[in-house]
Image (cartoon, rainbow, N blue to C red; front, side, top):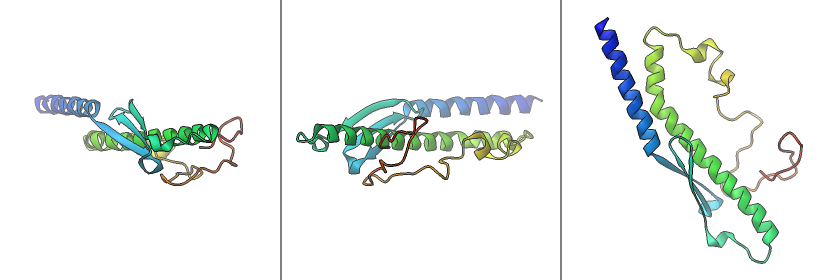
Length: 149
């Protein structure tokens, strides 16, 4: 029993250390070939947005605003995905440890990670590369309006 309590205390300490490392970490996402850069903490909090001056076209302000909003959104999504990957990497040893300690793997109990919505993008989700333009003709969201993302 003492060994079990000691193991639980050690795991709790390791978990707290991993959570602190995530809080201290930051990841960067980019869009438009680096024209827009977003920095997100390891816990997913947006820390910084940087927009290159070369991304701004003074001749067509409306189009520039739309392009910039698309690039900012893409950079934030990129950084958030990287933060989620970092979280998964930091926390997966604890999930594996719990599954191996006589506790059931909850993901398997509920039909795998995808059944809980943690399996990543759906088949219908489109991912854009940094230099790829969004399809503005496709409806986005409940209102069916194209948002350009």
